[in-house]
Image (cartoon, rainbow, N blue to C red; front, side, top):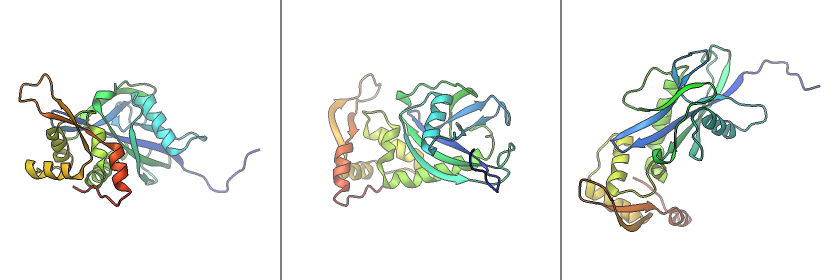
Length: 230
């Protein structure tokens, strides 16, 4: 016979804010259309209930795979939300995660209790179920703070990218322009980019040099007190 508790316990869920970067100058977020009540038919963040034998991140990755077919992605815990009436089914605490994905490497497919799964541009979002608008805004704030001090932005780019693509990513996420010359000078001075000696192909404009984030060099430089700071 299992242990019994004197006090009722709230349910626990996980919710995931998954960001993607579209080359047409747009930060996007992955949403699912709910198939079941509450909020059936409404758009929401991917997520669901944590199983008794699961760790939180394990549950988040499972729900993402089940509802959107997204796997193998950068995932960080954001914060917990526990307002008593945030879920009409009862007192439910959710632990939110935010994730960054390369849109070129992931095929979205709705499954389980998700009617649809699709990318939405951040400037044109639908009304969200539960308190997911609050969670999304918190995730944006965290992303903007973190991307200045940690090279997580590379998770949103293709493996090979141009300095123009990198600059546009930072401008869109941070919602501010950067001087082209100063941005490039600062990035190259950090010495964490690998020049691939390749250029873009099949582009209408002049082909630009391609680069790659050097993860091993970044880790080595961290050991010497190196700070990534834009």
